[in-house]
Image (cartoon, rainbow, N blue to C red; front, side):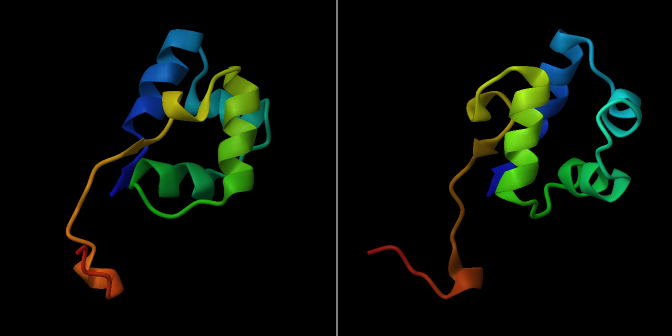
Length: 76
């Protein structure tokens, strides 16, 4: 499972709010909503956030193992 919990912490550390993202950086509010709910976003969106926050991808995204059975993949 992918989560964006680190994004909100990094934003706070950098002094950038969600309001800043959609007013100063023209981020779409629906993208922010998708991030809030750990939904799929494009790599372009993640790249843009890294550029805005001057951070590495690991500062905004985190992976936690899950069973992956919903994708038809069963680990050996």
